[in-house]
Image (cartoon, rainbow, N blue to C red; front, side):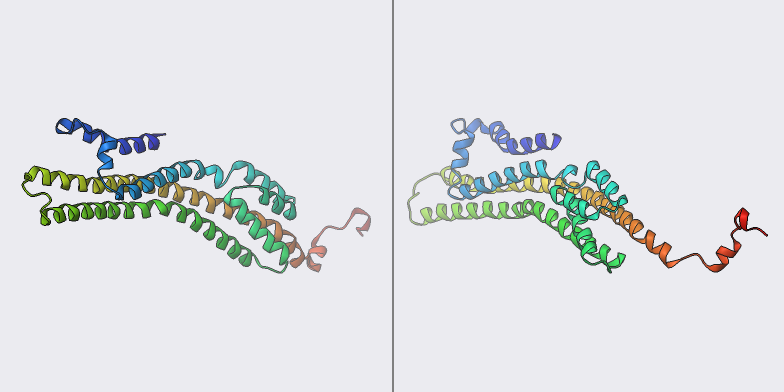
Length: 263
């Protein structure tokens, strides 16, 4: 919620600044002011809408419940202790957590390859975890891209506006006008740079915020995946340990004889 208030403040800050300095521009409102930026404002407007949609989408999707939940971990642990691996695979397919995707890949590989070692299973799980983490990190990188593109688009609009102003002067269309009228053309051109910087600041602030959230959730995902692999290893190796270490004749000799067999 605090992040949403921050977003609204950054979004409204330029309008507040223009309003505070609007003693000489009383006849201009924010919409009219922005419309003077030229056609480049269309691209900046699209970037601002895209930024808002991404921020809202990330608030709804990048949550702990989409990474790992206590319900899934408890059910997975119960099924692993029962050695119901096929049931856990089917259950993981119905879940939306990222840890469910890792569990599904690891157990599916284990059931289809009975001779696979624990190292092989761990490598499969780590590969799927890296893939899921990469997808999550790639999603928020769009905000960083907008943070780099928006200022350049704004600067492009400013350069185009200033070129038009100087072309009109060179052609004599502004002959006899005061320097103040030339300055008007320049500040209108600078509007796009200001808007581009505002969009960039908003995008980079929320990119930093969601990057921290993603890193925290990836740590929880790694811990959950390690816990499940440890449970699987314990259940798989338990019967093997008994089969590989049968009781030796000396163990039987050392055991006390039954009461009826004592001589």
